[in-house]
Length: 509
Image (cartoon, rainbow, N blue to C red; front, side, top):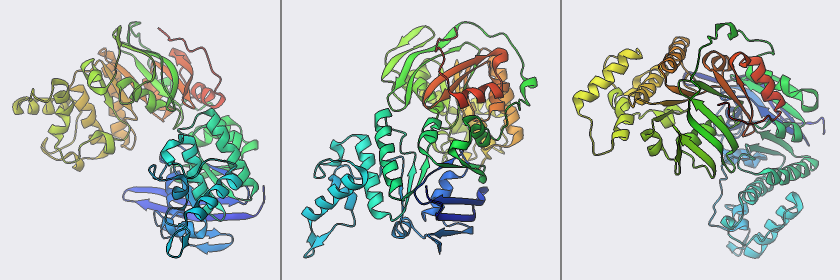
């Protein structure tokens, strides 16, 4: 690895309305190195990449490329400067050939027409010489696997780039053999003195392929580390912002008796490329936590259980009844409810009122043609506005006008109105004020005391410890352990995440 700085970012800051996404961030990329950007949700990784590649304009700071100041004004401008990005979602045209995808918008011309022979020759050359891949470049892209399509995207980026390649979650939809192939390509490009920024949430991959790691947290740079000189334990601590042994909320955890009767059971439930087969059970009146870093598979498990994603292996049962074809409609009918992670995109309906948002779930449960009378709608809405202390001058106000905490309460109200037996909560307190967080935590424990089962997901380990009776720990899309009772502590969870030693996956029934 060279000591020559290829790309430098100094004092980069970027704000959006109400959010300081980046604050005085420094970052250095050397020639011939693979450098990882790591951090949890909201750390600033995506914002830094988007500012660097001209998607967003920075507010403050300076970029240097090969020692020269530069200011990318668009993605095309960044590419012209030699900076190319390959995103998690492959942004290519599946109906075009491999060669066309590599040279789209840059097709070689001869007498004013596309020189197909030259384009195919150059496509073969960049794939074979730079990526060590030999395929028929005249074939339609869709005829190849996701892994090959990813390689074609990289080939295009490499052919455009003169030095910097950004790979944003490139392994998220690849299997182990495909990841191995990608890593061989990355090492080959590294040996050509290319600087590679690699974003991934898979710890094993980070320690296998990278030379250095920069950790961001809450829009600030925590530090820069040589991969071989930092342990998994230290890295997880830097990302989460907790040192080992900091179990400040352990004393606040209340022990209670939980029924041994299982309401939902997943037996080797999995989906290829999404989550490895997992054994998991949720008892009646239990708060079961899913803990792990971003990308560990927490949300994917929740979506499989609710039927948003279709499992391709395993068996799921609800109240001892085997469910053959799970989907959200069946889930709601069987007493399941789901509060999604991104309330803005997947939760609230901006143009509807608070009343309409609250009754939405119950209307879906009763059916489209079994309309809920207006009087009943108002009674239901008022009941949950009072119960959850939703701050609003009127139930007829649009939900978009509420604060984040009150929007979250409306989504909770929507599902509580369906009288659920299992409530799936994916990051229910993210982005809301401290007072609202406290109210929602109390509500979770109150609901469990009433016999409602809760599947609870949170990146804040102190919340997991305080709220959960039992915790399933995930890493790299697989279950690596389970804690219950007095075993549930922040340090134990962090140990398991860092070490990742697989355990016997027997359901704790």
